Every structure is written in C-alpha cells, then in structure tokens.
Image (tube, rainbow, N blue to C red; front, side):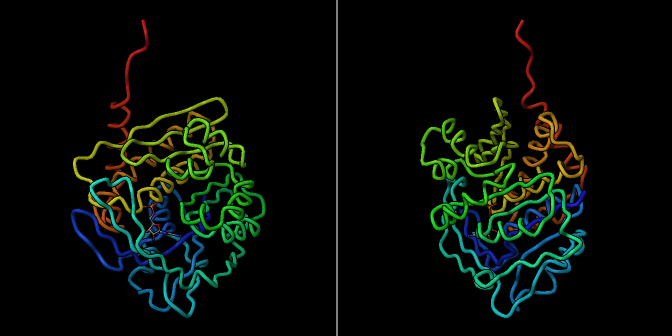
Length: 303
Ligand code: AMP
C-alpha cells in the first residue's frame, strides 16, 4: 500500500567533527521517501526551486517514488545549514532558508487523494494540515515536527496534531511541546493533543513508543562510527511507516517490528553524508541488522 508524504526537499550544508559538505540533497521528505521505498511505493508532495538538479529527480525516480506531487517553482530550493559537535545527538541549526516553501500551496494530485497511509514529515504545520484536508479517508496519519515549528507555530501545530494518529518526535521536543521536563508526564500531555501513539526518538539511546497503557523501548543499532546524524529521524520514520504500510497491520506486535525496521534504516543513514549510504543499501543488509537488534535485546524470563 503506497504512502503519501509531504515534507521538505532541501539542499543541506553540514559540518560534523568528521567532515563537511555543501548543498547536498537533504530534506525530511527525501530521507523519508528513500527509506520507505525499500518497503512500499511512495507518493511525494513537496516543492523545489529552479536550481534543483535533474540528477536528484532521476535518483528519486529510480527509487520508484512518484514525483507528480513535486512542484518546481520559480525561486530557490529550501536550504538548511547545521553543525554537530562531539555530541552528535544535538543538531545546531545555523541557517534555515524556506525559499520556495514560503509561497508553497500543496495541490494534491487526484491519484494521491485516497491514500490510506499519510506521513506529514517535518515542514510548516499549516502545510501539513493543508495536505491532510485534501486526503479523503486515511487509515493512518503519522507526523513529525521540530523545535523550529514548536517555537514558531505552536498553535497551528496543535491544530494539526488533533488529526494525527502517531507523532514521531525527538525527546527534547516532546518536553518543549508539553512544557514538562519529565518524559513520562510529557508523553501523556502530548498524547492528549491527539496522537494515540507517541514515538520518541532519543538519538543514540534509541526509541520509546508510548501507547494507551503501554511503553516499548528499542535500542539504537550499536555502530562504531557515526559520521553524520542528519536525516536519521526522517529515515527512521520512513522505515517505520514504510513497514506498517507494506504489512497493513497496526497492532502492537507489528508496531514494535516497524519500530525496529525504522531503527535499522536510520543506522545506515548516519554512516555517510546525505543519502549516500541509502543509495548503496540492499535488503539483505537491512534484514541482517534487524536480526542483530533482536539478539541485542533478547533475555530470559524470570524463573
Ligand atoms: P533529521 O532527520 O531530524 O536529522 O532532519 C534533517 C533534515 O531536516 C535535513 O535534511 C533538513 O533539510 C531538514 N530540515 C531542517 N530544518 C527544517 C525545517 N524547519 N523544516 C523542514 N525541514 C527541515
């Protein structure tokens, strides 16, 4: 079953302690779509400028990502500039240039409108809601956001969250959104905004999933070298929602499997800049890391 995703398609300039790159392909929707495309078909909604090269379009096409919802407008593509210190869990945003996103009005192609699985990747929450209003009757709506929007468009974000089933968000952002330092309490407050399931991304410490009366914890895949964490969250979401859409099953057991597939996908993205590691990935490597995470967390019942 295909997924409709709206999010950013960007040029990223990134510096980590291990290297730096200028204007590489990034954006929440690019990472999400590429990761999800290992599991199912993806219909993408976004905007790029006149400066967006054919090479990137060809790559996304090569992953079977439907680009009929990718508008090309006059102006410049969205740009994000960030830096990481040795604590790779924390991105420092240096510059955000919305560019063509400022005037973007999503126009969902007809064949996207009956999407059963929708992912609102990190983007202006007003645009997220606009897309949702053009979709007829989705079975699952999942959503991501970030501190930039929690601080700048809190009211709009809370309106969007009322229509969301699963929110995928960083630990610090849950606290910021709930205005509550304790994570357990913050999770309940945020679930109260609408999403019955909350997935909290904790960087190298893994993921916590909060449901009605349940919590699931998954570790991150233990890597010896993390090169650039940019896109880890969006890639996680792509694996997570991609697996759910492919299996068409939203029970707790399957949600947990999907969390581990998301974790595995993110572990590849952080090994190289941009989409470079995902570009060379094959499904056997994904399955291998899935089994290793299972072993990592396996322990016996109490006597
Ligand atoms: P993450 O998965 O959280 O590391 O997200 C990284 C991606 O988010 C980068 O490729 C950026 O282009 C994109 N990004 C950064 N800031 C924003 C923003 N304000 N709105 C949409 N996308 C953004």
